[in-house]
Image 1: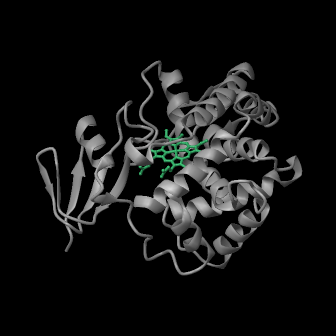
Image 2 (image 1 turned 45 degrees about the vertical axis):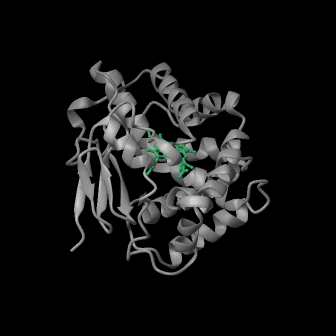
Length: 278
Ligand code: HEM
């Protein structure tokens, strides 16, 4: 049975994220051969070494070519159009919708195609990010995404990768931002951890990591929430701009979190963020 090791502390986690012996894990058994598995295998996020560098260059170019000055305003307008006076859930109605709409618009997707884009990126995120089994539905969603961005100058995988990374992570960033503002406490890290596999024996700080170990890296620290090392998040500024636009629209719209109605998962992350105009 391979070891499972948890590494915490900023210096040790940074060392682990830069260690060439620790690489992103292969796809889980729930990822069957098909378009979804092929997309995961082609992403920078899940690769290492020279292929990672090439793929990262490509997705970073795609992110850097986005019109960064307009992103906050697009997120603001997309949010405002949904704040129609009735109660809603900031996580499910906004967090899992507005970031994809905003990035989609910024990649040139027509307004009329945004709903379909949100559904497709959500399907891909539920399989690649959350371990739901892949299948005909997710494969078809991947095919549609790649076809939609076929003429992107950095290739369709780069655009699809940026949309995938943006989906769950920016929803989580919105959650921790809204909770921190509501509770008047410092913002927690949006992501709790990331995982690596040891492809050779190594040592991180004073922890020996034998080949084959699964290594959980604790990202629950302000200096680690966007990762570190070669895979460090290149979408940070865009994500913060999207969240700022959403939060500004919520506050200007007079909405407040209904804090006593929020339920949390086992890591203390909210499962929903009910809000009403008060
Ligand atoms: C516009 C939204 C976002 C985009 C386009 C984006 C894009 C990316 C990409 C392409 C990678 C893979 C880089 C590589 O492997 O070389 C990545 C990694 C990462 N992102 Fe983001 N990201 C976004 C939002 C966020 C948010 C909101 C967070 C958390 C607050 C976040 C945290 C991370 C972390 C921790 C990693 C590294 C994962 C690892 O090393 O295992 N990202 N991001």
